[in-house]
Amino acid sequence: MITEVFGDVVVLHTTQDLNETMGVTMREQLRPRNNHKVVVDLDATERVENAGLESLLNLQDTLRHKGGDVRVSVANPSIRKILEITRLDQQLEVYDCIIDAVRSYD
Image (tube, rainbow, N blue to C red; front, side, top):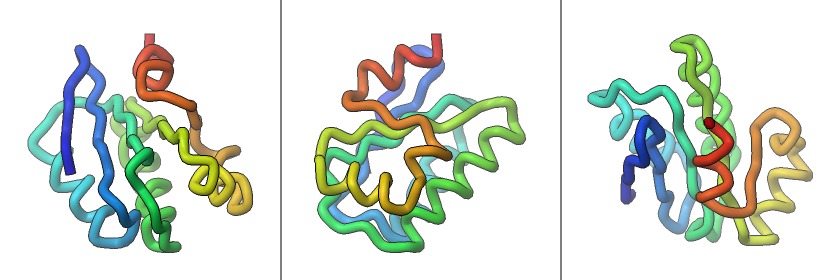
């Protein structure tokens, strides 16, 4: 997983699979940081498992308790459709590109 920081926003670029392992990796990447504004970039994601979707919601809950939030960036129509079918697009703020997701925190 690649991590970038834009001001006070952390962008986590996921790899091919959004699964339980990726959820653990996201938490580990954020643990040493004090950033509570996060964008999860799903553009490189090809497969999504239920545990991966659950990890996004868990991350959102954790960050909201700390006064932050999570946004999702996804241009891949297949992955976006999964978010729509599972109605996660109604629980998470979803953007077409990373720039829009990062700017949404302003």
